[in-house]
Image (cartoon, rainbow, N blue to C red; front, side, top):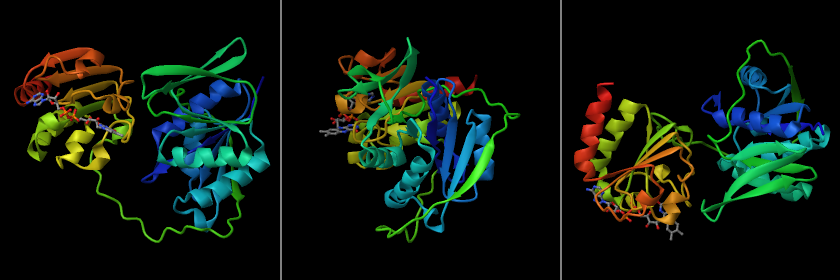
Length: 321
Ligand code: FAD
């Protein structure tokens, strides 16, 4: 049955996040030929709305109010509820990002609707929409069937392939004034950390370091390999706790969940809490001097050796390609 599906777009540093296009692809599967309505909350995003249309949205709404310049769950929540009231979508798709994780459960509770979070695959079989999501920290997967709407979905970045971009695709872009009342949170100032290089949660290649890297100095070896491969550097909590690197690099149950094409784990033992954040990586390479380390049980390729010898060799070899 054709459905109207709303996609909540996400903007970071003035451009749309890739997960927005993945959410449109997820919406296309759920809509079964119905309408895909994109939504951008906050003003002045005409070009981004066009981009959403090029990637498969049929129509895009720009929800405007000066109080929506910065994200607050209260403000965005009020805007989103008004749009849902107007549009009556059968499904709403978010990225499983900090924004999606914050907003989707609140909206689901307000609508008394179901929420399927952290979805990594959507298939339609015999008219049934089946969503796959990891459970037990990635040790198992469950399939959930969408029986009735409205339903909210948050999709894990880097798992659902985006639709082909078609720059000739046309669609309506509509500005919608939303009312924001009695905001309980106001963002006074945003202090951004200087971020360089590739965004970890969207990186195709991640070189990740653990306690075995032994210090900030060791992390420079990882960065050198990441620079050669066009990847990003990640870390285990062990490395973050030891002060070798910033917590923003932490991957795992209490850090970021990543799904790169290639994950190179250096001096990481492979504790369940770390594996929960990277086990869906397409290819895992482990470098560890302990042949019994658990990381080898989930690795596609293992190098038993000292990372301080192996990493410079890899960097040298990749430089020559
Ligand atoms: P270790 O376990 O100490 O492993 C270091 C590895 O380096 C060893 O396998 C060793 O053989 C190898 N090594 C040492 N020297 C070298 C060398 N020269 N060359 C090659 N290999 C070498 N952890 C996370 O990562 N992410 C999370 O989100 C997370 N959340 C948690 C939540 C909870 C509630 C709890 C209780 C724990 C959590 N942890 C998390 C911590 C987790 O349990 C582990 O303690 C942590 O992942 C260990 O980090 P590590 O592998 O870097 O260190």
